[in-house]
Image (tube, rainbow, N blue to C red; front, side, top):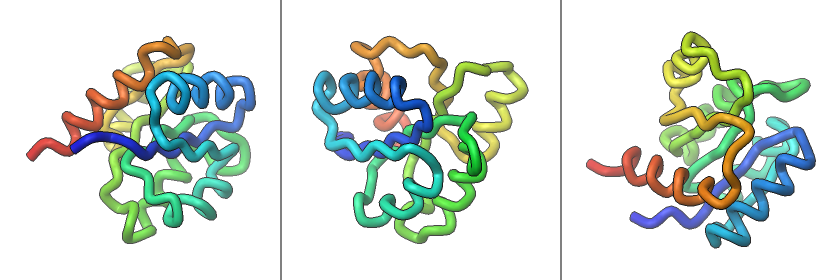
Length: 128
């Protein structure tokens, strides 16, 4: 199964812009870019992402809270999620994996490689 639709949730506009270039322009994904958890929750079901790339540190609703709310939506209950964070202590990484993420990507990320990284993670997650 080929990954084509990615939802990216990130409150930092400059990171959103770089990720948009990396994921839409370079990797060719159909991308929904959201500026926070509330925005993601409003748009996620209609967009039907195949993978969600989720920032950890966001105001109002952080990544873990956003993931918990997204999981309540039946159509997104099993959608693979990758967290993205600059703070990547092993204990925190384990917390994100325990919450249901398939992986954690470190910031700063390499824009030219982000799409390939997400494709690989997606393939690992959906393989029987």
